Image (cartoon, rainbow over all chains, first blue to last red; front, top):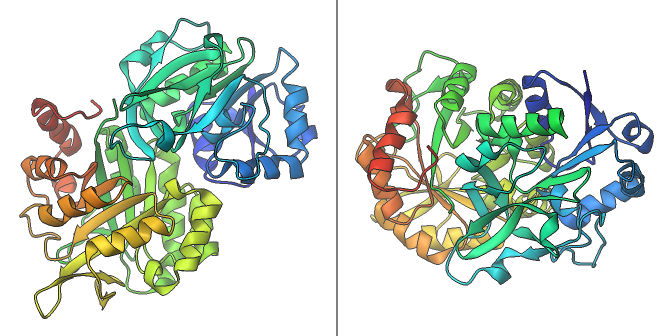
Length: 209
Length: 252
C-alpha cells in the first residue's frame, strides 16, 4: 500500500489532510525535510496562509529546492492544494517581496480583487462547481459536484495545456485545477474539506496518478 | 457560480451540547458533539461551527480535545470559537483540526493578537463574531464577552473595524433574536452586507426554513442555525430542498 507524504511547513490546518487520507484507508507520513521527501513517491503539498510565509518556510527546511529536484523524477507524483497549488507557479501577486514560487507549472497567481469587475465578495469562499477536461487521473464525475473554495488569489495558466479545470467567480474564470502534463497537479479548492466528492477526488490522485 | 452556504452551529457548554436562548444555555441536548458533527457532516451541511460558551476559560483544554475528536470525521470546513485569548490557544485549535477561528471578545481586548493570527494563518482563517443587542437607551450596540460588555459602537462600525484588522468573514448574531424563533435581524444584516466586502454569515433566531431564505434575501452570503437542526431528522437536507425550490443556489 502506498504511503502518502504530506509536506509540513508549519502553517495552517494540515490535520484535515491527514484525516482525509486516513479515512480513505491509506497511510500518511509528515514530511519535514529533504530525506523524508525522497522516501515518498506520492506527496501532497497543502497550504493555508500567506505565499511569502510558505516560500520562506519551505526554504528554511531545505524543501524548496528538494521539491523541484524530486518532482523531476517522473515516477514521483505531487498534488498541491490551495496555496500549495499557487506555490507550483512561478510567483504570486500576493508576494510583497516578489518571491519566486516553485515554478513547476507555467502560470501566474493574480489577485482576484483586481480581476473582479462587479461586487462579488472576496475571498471567493464557499462551494462552487468545476469544469474538468478529459484526463487520465481525475474522473469526469467531478463536473457534477461542488467543491469548497477559500482564496483571494487565483491561478491563470499561461498556456491552456496546463489547465485541467476552470471555475468562475462572477465573471472571472480562473484555473481551479492545473497540471504540468506529467506528474505535478494542483487544485485550488480543498478536496479534504469538500465532503465525500472531495474525498473521491483525493482518492483519484492516490490511485490513478 | 458560487453557492450560498447553510451552516450548522453546535453550542457547547462544559463539554455538553446545549440549546441557546438569548445567550442563556440551560437546555442540554442529549447527544455529544462528536455525533452531532457526524450527523451534520452526513446531512451535507456546508460548514460546521463549534462554539464553546462555557463561562470559564478553564474549559479551553476540554474544548480543544473535542475539536481534535470531531475533526476526524468532519470533511466540511470546521470553524471554532469561544475563549480564544492568545496566539498559542488559537494556533493549537488550528493544529487540532479547526479550519477557522471565530473571534469575538479578543477584537476588543487585544486586536493586535487577532491581527497576528490573521497574518500567521491568513485572513480567510479569521471569522469576526459580532453580537448586537439593545442597550438601556434602546439603541442597538455591539457586545462582547458573551453579551456582557458593550464596545460602544454600531454593528457596521464594528464590522468595518474587524474587516480592516484581519477578518475574512463575519458571523453576525442579534442576542435579542437568539433562540426567539422569529428569524434573523434582517435590518442589520442588510446594512452590514452593503458596507463590507467580506462574506457575511447570518445567525440567531431561525425557526423555519423561510427564516433562512429571508436571511439570504437580506444580503447574507451564508446562513447559520443551531437549535432547529437538532430537533428535526435530516434537517439540513430538508432546508436545502426548500431553498432549491425557491431557486436559491445551494450545494445539493
